[in-house]
Image 1 (cartoon, helix red, strand yellow):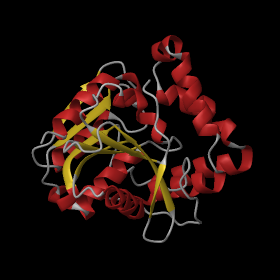
Image 2 (cartoon, one colour):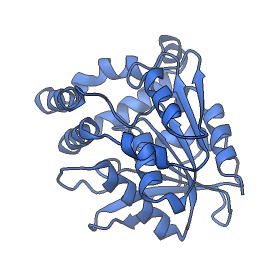
Image 3 (cartoon, one colour):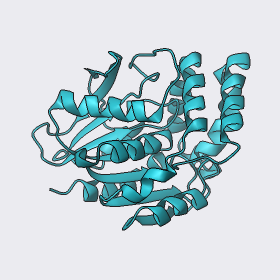
Length: 270
């Protein structure tokens, strides 16, 4: 993994501090902004950044309620998370960037492209969705409440088999251990509010308006946001492309960092 820079901070519209790490050449016109998956932080992207090269400027944020960002009381909305990303771009003086996100971060990237189309140079959507389905509010509430009742450690066995294939977990125990460490460091009230945000999210109505180059990647064995959800995104976003990554589950940027980096470099051209 690449060495993560010390975090910097931007101020969101409501005053919440949003932490981010800036990688690569700050003067580059090839700019990428990245949002991690639920209960991770900006270091989620370190292995992808290592394959991007130093001629690209990359801002990897800690979403609100995560990492070193502020943890305000809820309710949380995916549109607020998107506006937080816009505040980071403002702090950097970036008018536009290619935006990428994994799982929750992909949902935030979608919201950013819908709300800030002029600031979106391209869109990378990894193992994500615009809508989790009719049962999502109850499903996500159950997951968040389990963390409240029993602690985040009670979710680890469930999470790690969804995150990675058995083969990857066996071959890369260091990556698995790091994900567990970040997951367990989360603030439980913020985790609950983020679960509720994902359960209540429905961005399907905005997909047809996305008009930037869009690349969609999904793990072949992704149980959390399965291939059918990725196909629904591809069907709704004109001109998008879909690639299914073999023998990958939900955190494909960690299983296929080189492929995800190549996708992002393509989106950040010029």
